[in-house]
Image (cartoon, rainbow, N blue to C red; front, side, top):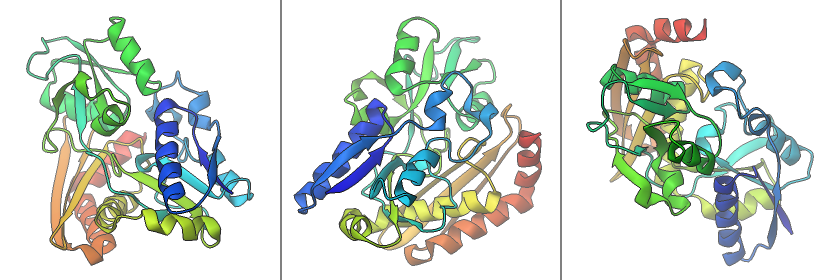
Length: 298
């Protein structure tokens, strides 16, 4: 029986059960093992201040490497671009909507000074750029925790991923889905990352979960992030999509206050996703992203 490792949050367990059901349909019996990660243990600190890559993956990857788990199901945006030796991204299933949403109010209906909760520098920076009159505050916790904070009056609106809301049946709470041009999503947002050891029963079982177009899209996005040298909590966004064998990608790097923003776009054959992402990252660095990132890290 395969052991599927996952974080213990409501959303993470939904994702793990989804993968478990798909694997079972292909004839692979498996059980879920919930693992508490470093990121789960420090839920009261803004992610940007923690500054550690692999916050939500380290302990899960240790279980894979130690043989205590065969498969790990991650929100791909949490998975660092550099995986430990011996582990691979075995599959990226078909992606859910990668965009961000406002819950509680539409963007135009928020009055000046309204308090908006954002869980990442990326969201906060881009929101400040389009609405510098808003008060953007950090909000941490699982999806249900953040929604409770909104309902309790701590915020006038909060920014959340469309994918998580839809997966947990809260899509009706979305007030507005923000266009990629307004709020460029996190690298890998809306996608699941199925991580396994580089060979063995877990790897072989999960190959059937892969969606080639989704995998190519996130490969390009992760190529941008790897080139920029950023983790998942820096003000970087990227969104790629594949249609008819062609991949198109847009990426942004923003200063935390939203005052500076560098945007770039590229396209090419989906089979060259890694190269396209890498070259777009290099282009962004050459056009000012390096200075923005250096300032964000100091």
